[in-house]
Length: 73
Image (cartoon, rainbow, N blue to C red):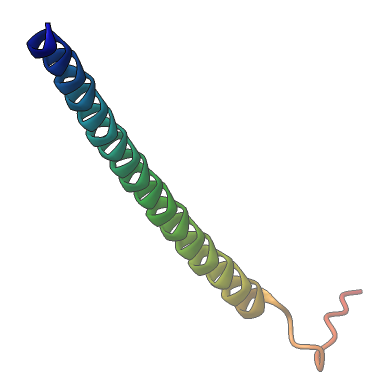
């Protein structure tokens, strides 16, 4: 019987080790997915900033100078 108890304890240790390894793998996958999501968000923010700056430039170029008055009779 002592041999059987050792096998049970060995199995529990193996299950514990594989459980920790599985947890580490899942946590790594989640970290990778989070890193990708953050990179995508940063890229979207960069694009929005560029588009906003382009809109401001377009508005500046389309504005009528304040020194002229367009009067038609």
